[in-house]
Image (cartoon, rainbow, N blue to C red; front, side, top):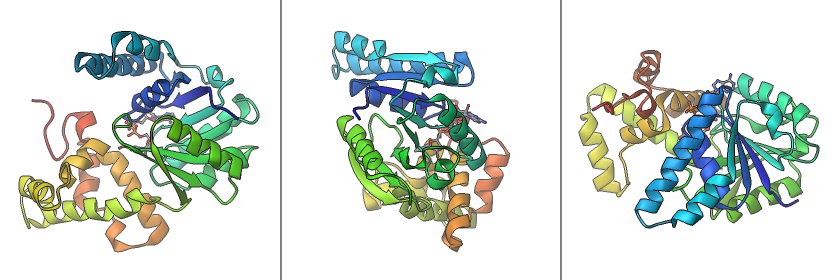
Length: 284
Ligand SMILES: NC(=O)c1ccc[n+]([C@@H]2O[C@H](COP(=O)([O-])OP(=O)(O)OC[C@H]3O[C@@H](n4cnc5c(N)ncnc54)[C@H](O)[C@@H]3O)[C@@H](O)[C@H]2O)c1
C-alpha cells in the first residue's frame, strides 16, 4: 500500500520534526495534539523551520509553501481516520501508548499501519491493544528528525512482512537510511547510547570532572558533535529517565540503572532544553 496520508499524534519535541520530514516527502500530514493550540503551535514550529531553510537558501519559497500546505492541525483523533499510517509520538509511557493504540484501532481505517516512535518500550504491547497487531511496528526517528538520517524500523514477533516493508519504504521515501531491529528495549541506538549517557551523569555526580570538561572531552576526544550532558538536555531528561528505566526493566544491567542525580533533576523539573534548564541553562 502506498502511504499518501500520515497522521502524527503528539506535540512534543519530536512531533513537528517528523511532520516536516513526512511533508517534504510529499505526503499529506495531519498533526494531532490534545489541545488545538498545541497542534497549531506544531504547525507554526514547522513553518518557522521551513522559513529558516528559505532564509539560508536551502529551500525556495514556493517549495516551502507547497510543503506547509500539506500539513494541517487538529485536536480531534477522528480526523486521523483516513490515514494510511499513523505514527504516535506521545510521552514515553507504556500505559498512555497502550490506551492510544486501542483508540487509534477503533478510529483509523482497516489496513492502515499504526506505528510508534517509542525509544525503548515494547512495541508488541501496543500491538496487542489493537485488532490488527500485524499492522503495528515501530518507526523510530531521531532528534531533530529533519536533520538525523537514521530511522529504526522495529519488527515485533507479530508484525507482517508487508508492514515492515512499507515502513522501510516510508522512511527511505523520506530520504532516511532505515535499519531493522527486533522489538527489544532500546533497539540498536539507545541500547548502546544510554549506558554512555548515564555514566556521564555518574562521572559528574562522583566529581570526576566538571560538566564542561566531560562534554569537551567527548567532543574533542571522540569527535562527537555534542557532549553527553548537552545531548541529555536535547533529548529531555524525563524522556531519558523513562528510556533508562525501560532498559533496566528489560535487562537488569547496572549500566542502565539511572543515576540518582538524573532522577532528582527530573523531580525538580529540570528537564533540559524543553524546560529551559537541565545540565545547562537555556534561558539566557
Ligand atoms: N526526545 C527525543 O530525543 C526522542 C527521540 C526519538 C524518539 N523519542 C520518542 O518520541 C516520543 C515523544 O517524545 P518527545 O521527546 O517528543 O516528548 P515530549 O515530552 O516533548 O512530548 C510528549 C508529548 O506527549 C503528550 N502527552 C503527554 N501525556 C499524554 C497523554 N496522556 N495522552 C496523549 N498525549 C500525551 C504531551 O502533550 C506532548 O505533546 C517518546 O516515545 C520518545 O521516547 C524522543
